[in-house]
Length: 77
Image (tube, rainbow, N blue to C red; front, side, top):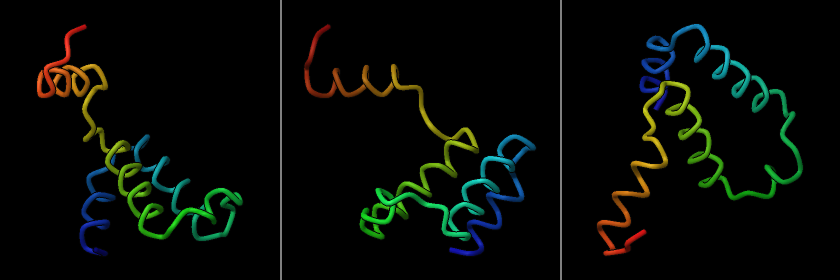
């Protein structure tokens, strides 16, 4: 896991690096809010992973995802 994080950080541009820094710094210094502390650790990890992916622009546009899901489930509109 450390190696994967290191690789993602190495590939990050300036803006992505700032987002990653803010996330990690907040997490490590305990500035999470009470809601965050009440989320199970597995969900916290998934959120942090998603944030890293978003910072690296690995996400997909919502419109594309919705279109794919509508097609998959036969929903029109």
